[in-house]
Length: 301
Image (cartoon, rainbow, N blue to C red; front, side, top):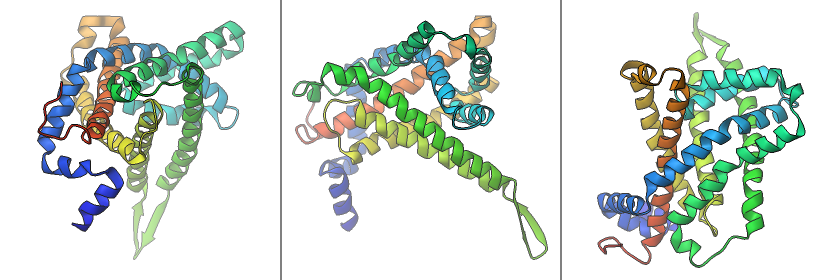
């Protein structure tokens, strides 16, 4: 009972309904996602994310290379980009490196173009969140200036997070090169370093998703509710990501069908799956909020 009381204090009284009827809650979230055309929204987010990802990475690396070593930055970026685009991070980082080698040719028009395209995915994601959190959008409105500036503030936040991840990852890699001697035996810390790097990536993934759920929906969201959606989407993506790695390594024949377009197709597929889970996490939060007005057992349209 004490644990339930703590959970209710953190997540609200709705937690009792979810714990008693988890299957009913999951079913309601899936029905709501389908009713909101979740797959269609995910496709739009994935398409604009495909347009945004390279300009966004270029801007981040150009800015952060003034603070930290570019090679280390690209190595860290490749490691964590692999979480989002299994099997394709090396190709994207290669293209990114080619551009950076000739960045002295970048003019003002190209810079403005990259700024525009790097914000497209955030703009479309905000629109998708408005559909999922319609019960919030009906009673609240976000100022147009806030919507215009928010993607760039979020990009700045991502840059700061990337810098911190680079610094921490460098320290963890240094630990992995150390050895411990005890009672005449020597153990390498490489395994410990690898586990810590994985946990760092998982924690960063959860925090990033939680921040999206805090910022993108209209109105103020409880941190505990945003964290609920972040953990849900992160765990689902971890399972999906490992399945994608196995599929592309063993069964996939996409290169036979699409030839030179393989990288673009695989990246788009990965982004669409990631966007689907991202929006489903938002749907989980939305349905959790609505349990106050529409308890489980009452059908919703």
